[in-house]
Length: 122
Image 1 (cartoon, rainbow, N blue to C red):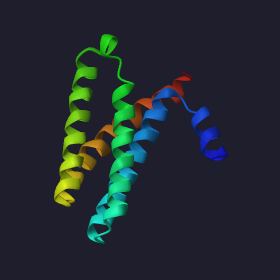
Image 2: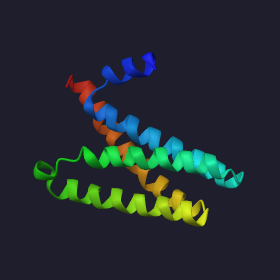
Image 3: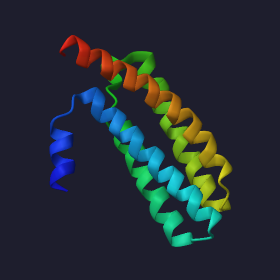
Image 4: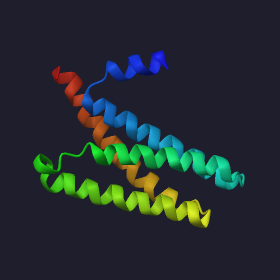
């Protein structure tokens, strides 16, 4: 926990967003594994954690200053919540695959932005 706290405190806001995407993707993968193993409690835990991270990403959106991008991300996070809940109800990994595919693309974009900030000393 101390290492994680130090890691979080030393990151830029963009790097923190990347960390959130990494966590969400990690828990989505764990949920898919749990579905494959028919481990309902593990699936529930992993999906709950992924949903909590998505909720955090959604709550940090600045709807006043973010304009169309913030609204689009808000819509996307709502869609992700619905699809992950669909996966929980149906015990089907396909909706998780859909969300993970989109999140990997978004994570890559945020990572590129974060790398640019580091290079520029922001």
